Length: 461
Image (cartoon, rainbow, N blue to C red; front, side):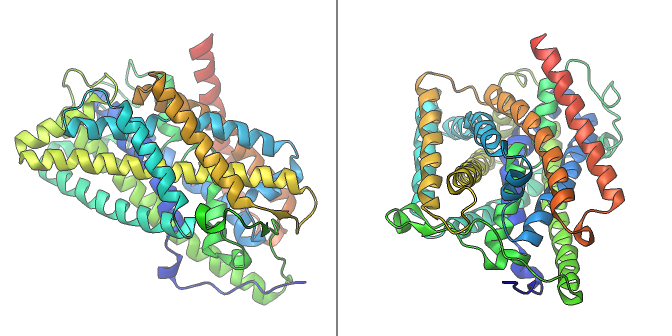
């Protein structure tokens, strides 16, 4: 039975999903990889950071397009066209994000505040704490939305404050030049920068990897478009004994003028919301973090070692301003990394749970399955895997982040192609991407495919 395509909600009520997707990238590309590159090579690489987040804006919007129209996650559509895709998404998601580099970075930064050298026990505590926070939440999505919004808003304003205080006129000019690839002794690409690190940073200019696909899950749970009629994932301890009647597929609507008009209104408003929250705030965050790294640590010895450049930043901040501000910087960075890992574990658990449910339910749209239980099994499996790696003394943050990011860049190349094919085959012509947008998306696919192929050849052959 058809249901009406809902009218758009007020802009203020739209806010949420883009904050979460943005937060998923803050602890990887924005806080670690791009500032690391800047501390060692300068701001001439800023153009690539902007290219990365611009690509992800277009990628995310096509993922959102499917969920907005269908009222279901994009994984259902992918499964219809590519029946093998659920297995790919489960395996590639676990491998790509099971490496706990981000929480290791959070722990190392927090450990430096207290003068602790062996930070793996803090990392283990952080991982278990994330599991507890998610498990005890009443509704997982609303908990994620509140935490990420507060952390992003406070974090960006704090970084802006530091960047303005510690940078000079010439630093801002260098940032502007970096938009067109003019660097310190190089144009576009510095000598010595590894392709793997560059690809990792490009992939993490935003969420990265399969995490982009959770945009469809979050906007569905937020109630965008036909997602108004969807169900929510409850917390572990509010739902562990209850099997849910899960209807994985969304609702349908009639092709009439009113519904088409409502879709266009939705598309316009969520495009603006994602442009401002994800693209603009993400670009500002990356630019400020790169500027701060350049102003404080560029040219210092030791930057190339792990995430030592972050510690170097705090030393310079302490010496230039006040010691407590340097410590506060480390605490803020650690919290931003922590909430990124929180978001990643939530998103990856959603991805894997949805794909398991798809295969278990098969063609039965109203099958009985405890989606929350599957979600929490994957959540704690990832936590146990991370703890195991730490206990085996595998916990150097930047290496783990870079390796995971390269894997996720390859995963991105795959899902860019699959999503666009799915939208072309399953969405009515009236709701498909314009020709210009299709050309842009094809170009993005070529960029990631070429960089991924070159990186694999350069690394293994």
